[in-house]
Length: 248
Image 1 (cartoon, rainbow, N blue to C red):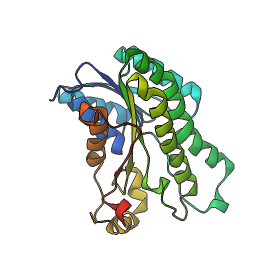
Image 2: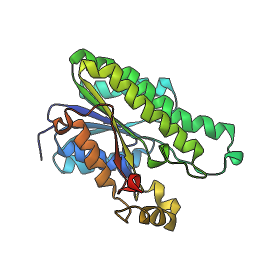
Image 3: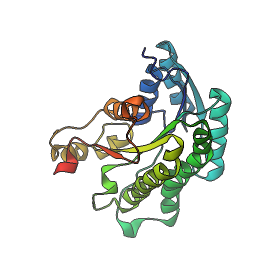
């Protein structure tokens, strides 16, 4: 186990599956005490057991991040478990697709509550403390459709476009105090959540130079880069991890 993040605490939202799970395992492998959140306690405890079995340190906090109160409660609980939060990975998100005309207002509100409001107030709760200590790292998980117009993706894509702008604004706000804020923009990735897309995921991936779907661990590796000193001069960046889709 690497000790690169030894002595630090990392909060990973949506850490019970997919990219979040892979990120929790990766950061724990670098020595961080990982606090992972999610809605499924059973899956969350499985991730914790996996990390602990490998010699790492992890705790699970059940959280349904939909408003400022739930974000603040999670931040408080993470501090109770880890003493302080040095790394925040805003990964939790929902990604419904479909025609604009068929979108119910309740669905619109839930997407923005989960994908925009919760990360906003988690940063509001945690970044000032990082700034006061003079160090910290925040990574937001976006998507390639935040900048690429695709039919049926207006709701999800626009919520992640907001995340990308907030990434840059937070870098400007907190960067001078030593807090680095960046994002990754994943391409097609095979997770429990994207299984519903079936062959469509492979078709989307085939259009990129890599010609394949990514594994969650490949996204986790990019996140690990952005929270460690290897990226010490990277701030306000949105890193495409999309198999080259940005190029075509």
